[in-house]
Every structure is written in C-alpha cells, then in structure tokens.
Length: 323
Image (cartoon, rainbow, N blue to C red; front, side, top):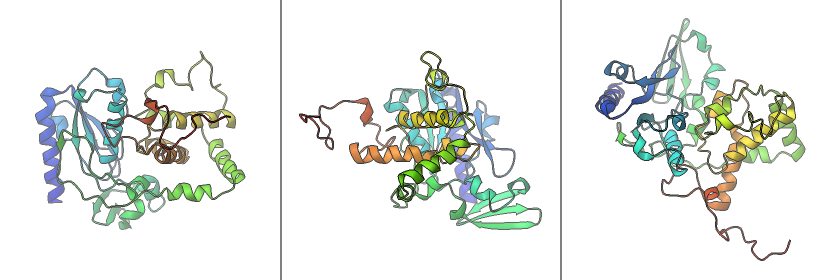
C-alpha cells in the first residue's frame, strides 16, 4: 500500500507540475462506488488531489482525443492505452507535440462483468486488490476472489504492461509476463462450421440495439460526425432495426478498423448487450499480422500497411498473374 501511495503522490506531483503547460489533464478519479473509476479533467491542484490509479481504471482515455485537436492535453495512460496514442500519431490524427503523456505501468484491470457473476457489485462497500486476490467488502462480510478470474481478457494476454510512449513514467516499470497472444479465442470459434458461425453471429446481432456505444467508445473511430451509420448522402444504412442492418454496420465497423484496432476492448466493454464484437476486430488484426507483419500502435515510426502502397507485398505474389 505504501508503494501504491508513493506512486499516486508521484503522479499528482507530475500532473501539478505540468498544469501551466497544458490546457488540462485527463486522468481517473473514484467513481460512484469502490469498483468504478471515472474520467476526470484536471485543471487545478484541487482536481489533481482527486487522481487515482488502480485496477478499476479501465477506461481508455484516448477516446475523444481527436476532437480536442488544437489544444495541448495531458493524458494518463496504461500500456494498452498508449498504443491508441501511437496509432493516432501514426495516422496524423494527433500531433505528438499536442500531448503530455503520463505513463502508468499496469498489471491488469478488472472486468466488472466477471465480478458481477461472482458477487453482487451493488452491495460492495469497499474493494482492494492485493497480490493475486481481490477482496470485496460486502454487508455479510469480506469476499475474496482470485485476481486472475476477474481480470479483463486483454490483461491475460498483455505483452505491453508499460506505456510505449510517455513524457513522464510514473513508478517502476513492470517486467513483461512473456505471454504470447495465440488467438485461442479465434481458433476455438473457427473450429465451428460456417453455418454454426453464421448462426452464432445471427444470435449475437439480434440483440444489438444500435446504440453505437461501440463506435463512440472507440479511440480510432474519428469520423463519428460523418459515420456511415448516420450518413444520408450517400445513404449506406437505414434506421431499421433489422438483423441485416445491424450486421452490416458491425462488419463495416470492423473493416474500417483493419490494421488500426489496438484491441483496447472499449467497444466490447461499452456494449450494453454484452456482444463479443472484439472478436471481429481480433480476426482482422490476426490477418493483418499474418499478411503484413504489422501490429497496430506498437512502433511510432511504422507506417500502417493500409496507409501505403507497394507494387508487390512480401506475402502477396500476384503481379503478372492472369485472372
């Protein structure tokens, strides 16, 4: 606990020191209960005193950065969030000079959907993550959950616990766990027959309410004001709540993020219907990795493969072929 308080003090001091140089800093504060953090805009030392950083800080604060172009923004980021920052810079949607990044090494955030099936989170009066345990204080007493059982899926396969881009690194960097993303979730899904896969997505998309929370939560969905879902000239999608329209939107959303999605998981986390839409983005990412050997938001100097053109790609040999 002393180490955590020391890191929090360091974060607050660093933010206060940068306040004269930025318009504001985006960080985390305690939410409406012990299991929720909420984004906060820090403009004063009093605001900075509210800053926290723990396993409840699940939001990717880079969402909405594009709408703040022209301002100089401070930003608290985890390792996975920093990939979104890099991708925005790579695509020239943000200028590096417009950002002051406070990097926070992170060993995982909670998935409240997983906590919810193990405890009544509306009754939680206190929460503490210590080592490999999550301790919840309930009216009937304390309940201890294995930490690994309630971490977000992305944390179980995380290879970047430390931010990849930062101006201030807060606390000690973590040793990467050395895990490899084997895309086991995709492998299991693709063992199903085509008809079984189609039936799966029909069931999932039938629950979609077209609230567009997935789009609005995505840090790389920067064309919200001219989104194909809202455009009437050209008129891509109707407002009808049919399975076809829902499916078309989600497929086009995934295709627009091909080679861009950093798998922060905000789309799936924000879905009120619990649809596993990150599966679509992971499928696209695996194909881009296989064909172009590219991973979004990792190398600031790399050019995204769909932002460039080569007469012949290393793994695509079709020049001179007759069709």
